[in-house]
Length: 184
Image 1: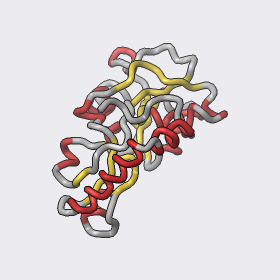
Image 2: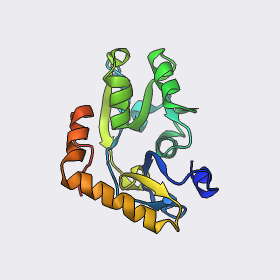
Image 3: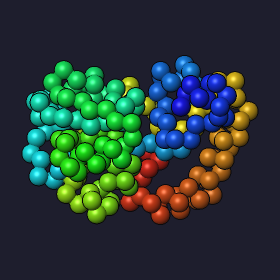
């Protein structure tokens, strides 16, 4: 998505893009509009831990080219098989069909797209939430070209307005049973 933005095929990325130091070198981020941890999901019956010992020899599914791909590659690439997918729906399908032992991704997306649905009934979050800013970033924001400071300021004002007038909390409560904004 970043190359598309930089080549002016779009004006803003609104796709759950995490603010990371590496990305800040290429794009201008607005203030965050949410911040959730990353989590592992596996079958409820899974008894292995989400650490090097537990994931040794396991197959981990992630969406390719994401922060989640980088995290599992760096932490478990030498001891586990990492299967990379073009889209998260493909990950869920392979997890459901037993071709993966575990997946790793944004906790909010895993909850909404898998765990809160009937097909997710046999799965659950496993291990501790991952909040390492070196991988997970400083929150999720809109991404713009570095020179688009005026547009970023307009988005920042809109985010501030809906946070202060209660609109943000009202919308978030409709979809999530946990705080998606995170700490200030």
